[in-house]
Structures are given as structure tokens and as C-alpha cells.
Image 1 (cartoon, helix red, strand yellow):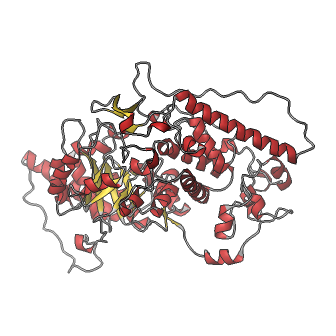
Image 2 (cartoon, rainbow, N blue to C red):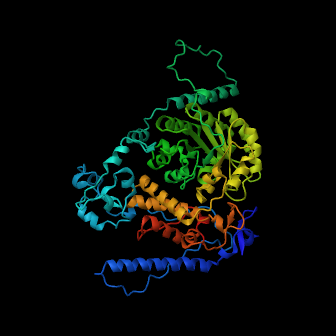
Image 3 (cartoon, rainbow, N blue to C red):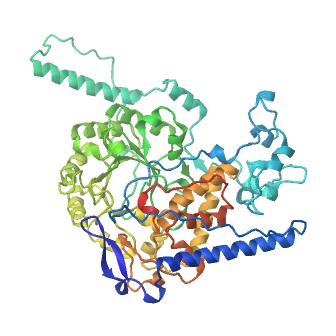
Length: 607
């Protein structure tokens, strides 16, 4: 038996003996591994079926054969033996409305008169709706138990916990009073702001002043190039002394200050770095959190889905927003929009995104090779922001052509407050090991500006080695997805042999946070399930400390098939989509008949 590891050439090779990695008594084969999971799952289903038969004596005993085993999709690799890479771009995208054919009118839930009357698209017949509604998932509603009332009323998938026999919603007055007037989630876009953005009636005074200077400088440069400078230009007219009413650019010392030194920074993670996941990481000790990457053009156009990425929970004490764009005008206006309409501690420019959709438009890593435009973006955003501006970069675009060390001294002059460096190039994406020697060199060049290192942190030992390089702090990305308790391990300098039941409790917390954030109706439950499954595609890579012969686990290591110390631990080790769905059904009930899921990344769904 061997360990599958990503080699320096970027391909998967069997390099290290299993005896140097994991205890032999937990070894198994692929067939035995999936056979155990399937047999245990079928037996649990039979037990549930027998219990339901005992309760429902009126129903006849089913004499049909058990449901045939569904064939698992094999994502092990391509015909040439290499693992699949990249995104599942053609994966199924089921709309949330597909899971809830008949929705109860929101006015009925709130006991109000529907303004649309007979023309309303939604259901108004409560009895009819309750007969067609899917059965409740559980006996207690997390939202009701936490806040004293559930805003989803009869449409909640836990409605029996807070509904009377005559379909009236109950409340807990003491809890309602505690949360009255308290804003748990900030940075929601108002309908009024969305309307003004769509009509393009939002004023960007600071941005226009900065962009005008760029235009004037461009015209001046063109005139000098043509040798047609105007010597008889009219004298500048003054209107009196400078007053506080004039727009004055804030000096760096006057901006809001954020202490970045020696902090643990949860990276902005697309799809998985949602608000419920960030709440989980905050509980385990993450110091700095950041929203998912948002496209500046979509924010300026008032897209609700893009503004949802800016939401901030009250537990996020140091929170930033990451934006992506390739032009000074849109990025500057977006920064002013964020500055005037959200509560943030810093704004981050993503100039390290490697995906083609962003790079081909000049954004992400593309900014690293367009230094003049990059400079204008940084200076423009700095001009309009009252909070620090940070930048996230990679080592470069090409694999053997690092350019970060050339950019960092320039960025210091542009006014950047903090730099995060991912120790890989765009070509490498997430293959090979991060170059921490190069990060060390760049950290010295960045001084006294804080520079955070990022790449391959999966244990407190990795974090300690990273701190020895002289970086100001550490950004953790995939390591937090694989084991969100890594922040606790780093702060307590220990390896945590976390049990499967404790990991299931973490998933329960995520599910409850998801129901708070996306809703406890059918649409909210299925949206929570989708994001839970995306996270499980990373979480299954974790190998329990108690099973390791050699500690710690490395982020680029892929284990062979192994049995856990109990059924749940074995189930959590599965890298098959069907088994992830089983875990989600433990927390969020059975999946709808038309439910489909395929993870975002191909490499996360093989068996």
C-alpha cells in the first residue's frame, strides 16, 4: 500500500510507503471500504423502515425487493491515468424554485393582506398548502429556539415546533425582546440603493475628481508629446481660502487603522467562504475574515447575488471585502460605493485570481503584468476609501518567472496597507508546493508594510515554520476548508485528534447557521445543503490524527482507502458524492426526488 502524493511535476505519483504515513491496521481496499458504507447504510434504512411500519399499523407490509444499489459515479481520472483537474463547468444547476413547486404567499405567513389579491402567483390556501408540503425535517426549529420566532412561519420545514393546530405561529416573548432592534447581519443592499444603481443615479464625487486628474494628466502628456503646450493658458481663478467644506484627501495617518500583526487570516474563498462557514471559523479562533470575491461591475449594477457576498455577521470583528476588476474607473467607483454604503474594516484587491474568466479580461493575476493600470487602480481606491486598502497577489503569472519582488517596492509607494502573497504562480494554480523561500525574500522587501504568507498551511507545525520566514501573519485557505479547527490548533500549539461526533457537531452548527442565513423553508434548506456538500468535498480529505503513523498530515497528500475507528469516521473519509449526500441527510433530512449535485472542482469528486 502506498500514499498518493502530488509530485513536483504536478502529477500524482505513489512515492511514500504507507507505513511512513498511516497505521496499517486501518488499511483497506476500495471494495471493502464502499461495501462497509453501503451495508451499514442499508441496515440503518431497514431499521427506520421497520420503526415506521410499527407506528403505521394501517399500512401493509411491503413485499417488494429492496431498492437496487445506485451505481457510484467514477471520477478517478482520465483514460490516461491522470487525475481530473479544473472545474466541472457543465455540472447541473438546479434552481431553488425547482424544489418548492407550490410556495405559500409571504403575506399569508405574516398575517397580512396580499397586495396582489387574486393575481398573486403564490398559494393562499393554507390547508391545501400544508397537505402538499413536504414533511418536517425535525421536531425543533433552530431559528425559533434561538430568536424566539421564525420568520418563515408555516413554510418552515420545522413548522410543527412553532405552529398551533389552527395554523397560528407562536413566539417566545423573552427571546424576541432580547433580539429586538439588533442587526445580526450587516451590509444588506436596500431596495432604494438598488434602484439608484440600476438607474445610474448614484453620485461618485470623489471618484470623478480622481478620474478627472487621470484624464487631465493624459491630455497634458499628449500635448507635451506633440510639442503643442499652451503657453497662453488663462490664469487659475481662486475663490478664497481653503475650508473644511472642500474635499480633502485623507492622509494615511487619518484613515482607520487595523492591526494586522501576528493575526490568523481566513482567506476569501469562492463558494465555500460563505457567511455560515466564516462563523464556524470565528468560533475556532480566526482573527480576520473576508467576504468572497465580488465583481466590481456587478456591484455597480446592483446585482443582489453579488451584494450578498458583502454581508457581515456581527461576530466578525475584523472584516474585509475583496473586489475584482481590471479598470481604474469601475474599481474606484466601486470602492467609493463600498465606502459609503457598507461597514468594513478594509478593502482587498484580488490580483491573484488565476481563473481564465477573470484573467482574460485583465483582472486577477492579469493586473500583475499591467503595472500602470494596477497603480491607477490602487491610487484611485486609496483616494476614495476611509479604510485601509490591501492587495492579494501571487508570485507571478508564469511558473519560472517570479515578478512579485518587483511589484512589492512599487506598491509601498502606491499606498497599500498590507500585502498577501500566495507562494504559487498562476500557471501552478494549486499544484506543487508553495515557495516559502520566495515569500521570505518578499517579506523583507515589503517591510515595514505587513506581508502575509499563504500556501500549504494544514497544521500548527506548518504555521510555526511559516512564521519563521518573517511574515507579519498567515492567511489560511484550503487548510481551513479541510479542518476549520486549524485556528485552535495554531493558537494552542497542538494536534487535535478530533472525534467524528465532534466533526458532526461542527456540521450541525454550519447547517443551523445556514438556515439562519438562507432560510428554513424548502428553498433555504436545499441551498444550505448545496453549500454543505461543497464544503464536504474538502472536509473529506482530513485524516484523523489517531490514524496517522506520521504527524502531521500534509496538504498535498492523498490517502489510500482506510477504515475509521467507527462507522461515522469511515463515512466522513469517503470521497464519493453519494456518501456526502448521506451526511447531509443526517442534518437536513432526505433530498428531494429531483436533487442533483456535482462539486465545483473535478478533483474533489473521485472515489
